[in-house]
Image 1 (spheres, rainbow, N blue to C red):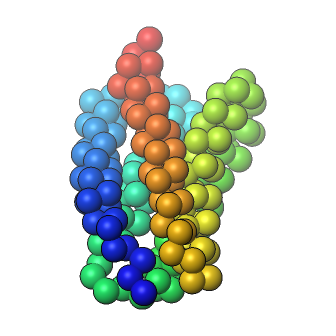
Image 2: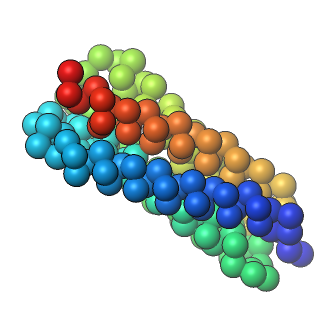
Length: 161
């Protein structure tokens, strides 16, 4: 069963968008590096944004591999989602310890966890032989993009205020 049949346009578009947005994060960091390093937690936010985009890039690249068994793709998506979940959780725990306003962390964590857990659910579903698990890539990508674009705004604009 080819679970990625009909998904190539989506996967290709998401791969390109993730790579482009990752470039934006690199530019934002390089332009404002001294300011980013000046504030505790902001380097972690930059790393989190970049990691989420690389997660989309990897997940969608794995999906583009031809004739890949559903279980293999499921394992790859679960590995990407699980790794991202652990990484973002580490950043969020660090932010929680800094005692920043709760809504800063809550909004950031909601987006990141929505992304990472969606990739995990996609992977688990495919491991169970459910082709509809591919649909969980959509919220994973959307949450990743929204979280990363929000962080890009902070890294490019808000950091200078």
